[in-house]
Image 1: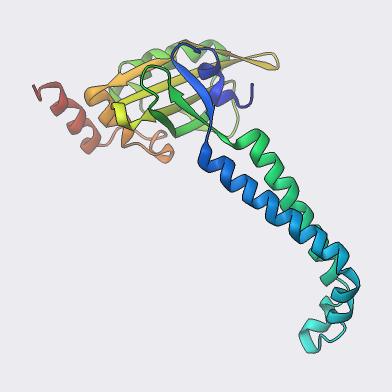
Image 2 (image 1 turned 180 degrees about the horizontal axis):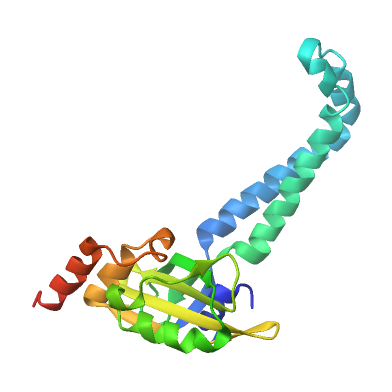
Length: 211
């Protein structure tokens, strides 16, 4: 399991799935290839880089000893970065039913004990921002939540997980549609620590009677 914010997704294989992203794979392969070419070139041309740097004058004189090793180091970092990107980060989540891609809208730890995770999920599952805002967002905590949007389907998934020792116990995913989706899709992570604005509340309430 990669991130605690994704724990609820990993526990719902019939609802969502993780697939390779073609765009991410292409970008990572390009970075890997460019880094590899630059690494070979910097190693083969190391002496030439050293000689070139001896011509540095004035303020650049202090960089003479760093040019050649710096070129090798940066190239090696590009290779490592491209490899990690390709193996660990070149994926995306999508809905099983429609194949619609999912975009993470917000995620955060909550400064709450693990036993309050169910109550947080219940509040979020109402879809009413007056019920689930504010949340005690924090840089650490025993509860974590995440909001993912399937924009093509007008649907939001809300996942909540509770810390259990060194692991995370995911709760069932909550699905928000209609006006509940519209409300939560407008919230940035910075909004979760405050009470629902009147604009968000008005949008949610008006959606209840839109039919």
